[in-house]
Image (cartoon, rainbow, N blue to C red; front, side):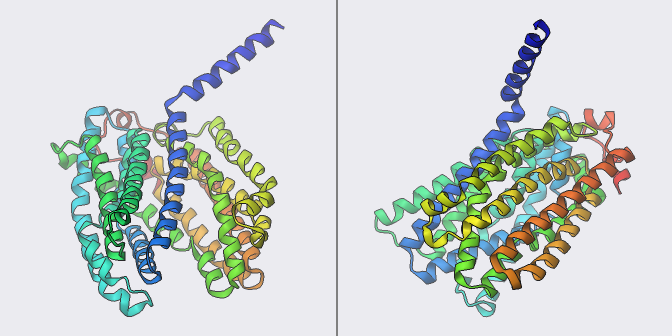
Length: 447
């Protein structure tokens, strides 16, 4: 009886410590900020749709999506290794690495602005959307879009994910507040003006975040050389895989929009919107664990269990309440979405668990493994979407997404087990103490 009581006390103590840990606070903050950003995005879209004419609203949304899509290509494998470098550097070196990040991003931002300017002259000729003038207006301040990923990686490595979350929410809140204020004072919303305000708020938020992280611009040569070496060893491999996998990520929506009836497409989008928050707690925990995963040769089973439970519980609740939620949020006309919610919610659970393995591989610098997993997801997405969507439409898209994510998880687990068994994840002592030398231990073994 006494031992059982002592065990119960120890369990409560461990749970209390877990909830009080920095990792838990960062994970919770990231998940809450992601949900808040989703709500702010929905409010912004609703406001703009009501305040702008159809042509202007389409020009803004297309221009923003083009900027987001283009930003994906402007990482070049340089900034993913930064997170690992920061996590394994001493406090003084971290400020120098942050300074190297800022220094490297300056030419990248110029290149991105020139690219946006060039794209602005091609958009109107190639698409049925008049977004060229808006893109030309925003070209000089558009570097906030690729800076998003850079800031996320930097905050991950520094263990300052909460700073990234706060900057994101404040930036989007300020943008929404401006959109509310402009019509109130008689200012007409145009696609160019709204896209410019969006880019300025985004850029201001990320610049403020980087300034808060206090970059140091002395002794940059060693840090910049280490970033380049990291890109050569594994960063560029991970970059190629990321571009390929994200390029096919939205293929299901594109195929449904092109080949299905409007009702099926609308129901699928409604179900996806309801299922999306399911994966936020698990994804937040996986993201917050980056620094610890960079310093340890394997994952603790407790982390895997925590991510699984944090995603599976809301998925189960959502699946049971799918029908009444669809009626409440949308209407009876979208009731078909309730049948899709369990499939998409389970996909979010699998995605959150995969995110933990993906974070581990990235934290260990295993770029070739990341590329292999991304290529597998790309191929499975293409095959399953082409096989299932034409005949089964929205239901086929849901099953294709679930099966592709399952294959992706299996490959991630296989890559993780191979890396652990091969001993390529054991951190070197000198790397853990100082970030002054290029990564030659685990990174070289991974290649």
